[in-house]
Length: 313
Image (cartoon, rainbow, N blue to C red; front, side, top):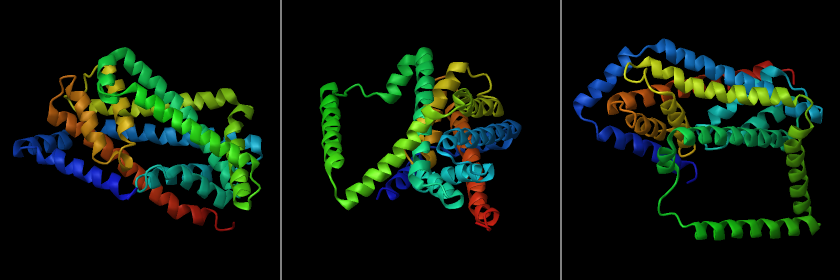
């Protein structure tokens, strides 16, 4: 159910989006696809590739303090595999990346996964920073997309308090238990802890921060350069790019790789900046299709080449 529902939601949104289009709208969107300047799309893919390479380099900075120096090729291919599997099972990519590097480099899974969790913490901080920048440009738009006007703050605080209480009780139980299963869980958690703490032990903190900034700069530029591919979007203001990127990034978590959601959400943002609905939808689909094809090809090839490159292991 966890796997099927996001995929089903994605295909439903695709059907719903297309069902509202008139024949002339479909012709208009096809025209945008045919006349788009794919140089900018190719540049976007190149920038995306640079972000993946940078992520593989950054990963080493957290593995080094624990005494591990995996081959760069195994790190980059593991990154590609993680993005590929996220298209099938939401958030499975982190587990797949840790499993892959553990298999081919003999790094304990829990420690590898801990470094990936630490990476995600840094990435969340960057996303929050970009969301803040978007707030500065269009506070009303972000509030409309991210927050419900009818939300109950008291209910949210009670739920949060309950979650904290459950985790505290669980922690107290685990810290005192001598059960074999519990001891294994504690060992796994300690491995995760060591991986997360590696971010504070690394010698090249400046390089880690540089690559974190570089990765997210590439993400934003990937979105920005594609605006030049279609005449209707090439004159978009900077705030439209930032807000569109934020909404697109958030939509990626709703279905597998943003299936059905990403084009619709991004199109919804662009129409607020006076881009026609058909052109906005064409932009969303061009952006999503190009990135998804890149992930499928790179991830599929990575699964093929990893055992070949490491056949001596």
